[in-house]
Structures are given as structure tokens and as C-alpha cells.
Length: 481
Image (tube, rainbow, N blue to C red; front, side, top):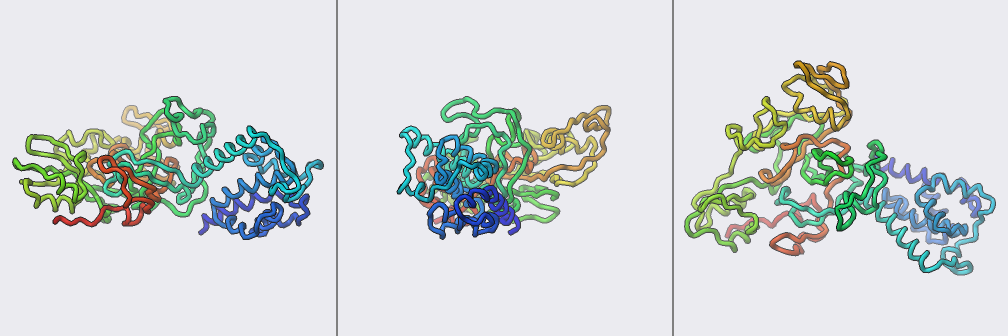
């Protein structure tokens, strides 16, 4: 509730710039500083119905309505140039007080909005220009501070989120980041549409700041974040990933035979967790229709020998397949430390940590203000966080660690970090491969599956507009018969 209060507080402060214009419109200027009354009076000036003030009470949504209201407000004072509307929308804090003190700016009435007595004359080019500009501003505000759409490209979150899901991600839950790369094409991420041309300028870069959110990142949340291990791009222009948050700041994570424990206690598994299975067949092979019935597609089967296949299955699917005609044996594959090939690319890739995707840790997840001791046995675990994510110079020489030129045997972290894993545990590149996700890389919370066009299946009507955190988007309950 406190974060919602802060979001509304910012909205209230925006109205303070309207003091002079309220007075010019014949209203009591002090109305601009009273919550709710400021919106009611604002709407009276525009000649709009007062009940619309209810939109001003909804954090984030209120900013969108204000874009339209501010544009109409300028018309009621016959300040109708394209430049004026641009200044009003992008720099209202300064521009509206200026208009309030400008003698030749006079209120001409709500008719300017309704085009009754006074009709603003605009060319068709200007009309289109205004419409396109407002649409771009509104879309950019929504995309930056409210909701953004993503498409799931891989199978790393199956069977919760499917390749082909079009996902709405809420930036309001954790609080939207203020753009760190301010000069960029409004609706682009890394490149202009249908080109390989970069759509942003690397400089200037703004410091990391985040608006108040509705909640903190919680264990079990499906989180969209910028891929931490990607170098050469600004933080907010790195590739977007989605995984499930498993470990929180300050916790110790350990994986033993694929089972995850936090601070020594095994945690609940996601409902549709998948693992790698080895299936041995006889000459009859597999029945595609039987596979389809339990939710396994042909493109999810990988042959490794003449009579053996690899599949990524839920436990229930594996139990069903054990009774299929043609299946001689089915076994979950565990990546043990004894086989070096299973360790390829596993974080932190040093001589002190013989970890795999199924045997990992214990690993302490950094937390803001947490002080840890450093030595040659653990520096590989935290080096990237200290050096890259927190912008320090770190070297190791003669058995000693130097941070910013000073010998260091400890370090205190400046931000929170998270440990992310995919639900498809043996088919996911996640924190087990590249380490922690810094707080400033968090984009938002996976919220709703808007639609799904699953490869090999097509449009999935059963996933249309389904909340991510509910069982509604999960696969149907398995029946083996």
C-alpha cells in the first residue's frame, strides 16, 4: 500500500504546476493542491464529466488519462501549436507554470475542446501529426511504465510458459525502471523494426532508478529481466529473458539431485516442472497420437541412438510413457559431478566448484548491504557482480585481491541479486550457467498470456488471456488412458 501511495503522490505533485492555469480559468487555484478535487476541477475546466476523476485514483493508469487531459487543457487556452503540445506533454512541470504567469494566455472556455463556439483550425497534416505524436507518446508511456508485450522464443519455461506464448509483462508490480538509455526509438528495443540497425544511442546513460511498485520480487514469480551475461549493450537494451525466481537476496541456494533447497530447506516445485528423460524403445517405436494426448510434440523428441531418445517431460508424462507399448525403459537423467561434460559452462567455471545443473551450491546470493569475506576460493562466484554489475576495478595478483587498487579481503554489495531458473530444468540456460540477476536488470513480472501460437500446434484458444500465476494456463490434468 505504501508504494501505491508514493505513485499517487507523484501524480498529485504533477497537478501543482496547474496553479496559475486554474486561476486563469476562474477556479480557485488552491484546488490544484487538494487530492481528488484537483481532478474534478480540472475536468470542469475541460467541460468533461466529473465522474472521470475516478481514473485519477488508479496509479499508473491516471498518467495515461492525464496525457489526453493536458492536451485538451492547452486547447482551452488557445495554446494549440504542435510545439506547445509537445512541451506540455513532455515538460509540463516547467511549461504549465510558465503559461500560468504569461499575460497573453487567457482561458477561452470548454468550447475549445468541444469545438462549439471556437474551432481550432488545423491542416490535415497537423491533425495526423497530432494523432501520431499522441499515439507514440501514449504507447511509449504504456510500454515504459505499465505493460509490455513479449513473445516466448524457447522451451525453457515449459510446461508453464510455452514457446509461442505472447506474454503481457507488468512493469507496475515491481515498479517501472526509469529508462537508463534515454535517446532511443520509442517502440524499439535493440534494433529498428525489420533491420539490424541499432535503434538507440549508447550515451548518455542515466543512473538506475525505479518507480514504486506493488510488491517485491517473490520466490516463484515468473520474471522478465535483461540477460546479465550479455556485454556490449546498455543494461536496459540487453536481450530479454524470462525465468522463475528461485532464490532471493541474502539466501543460500543448493541443488542436490535436481532438488532445490533454500537455507537448508527444500522448496516446493513448480506444478509442471520438466526434466530430461532417456527413453529406450523396442521395434514398435512411439505412437505419435499417444504422445500428443499427454502433451508431447514430435519436435520435442531428440534421437540419440537407434533405439534411444531424449525428451523433456513432466513427472506425470514420464509415468504415462512408462506404460506405452514400445517403451522398454524410461529414466530421468541426472547430471552428476563425476562426468566433466556435464559441467561445461556451469557457473562459476573454476577449479574450486565441481557443480552441474543437478548438483549445485551451496551458493550465497548477494544482498544490498551484505558484507562477505573474499579469497581465491570464492572470488569467481562474486567477481562479475563486483566488477561488472557494481562498476569496480578488480584484479587478483600474487594471491591477493585488489578492488579499485586497494587490497581487499571483503566486499559489501550495493544492490540486491536474484537466482533464476527455468521450469524446464534440463533445457534452460539460467543462473546455473551465468550466475546472479542484479536488481537493476529486472524488467517486470509475467502477468497474462495474451495468446499462443505454439510451434507444431498453432493457435491455442485454451491459453487466450490467461493469468500466468494461475493454473488456468497450465496443461490439462494428465490422463494416461
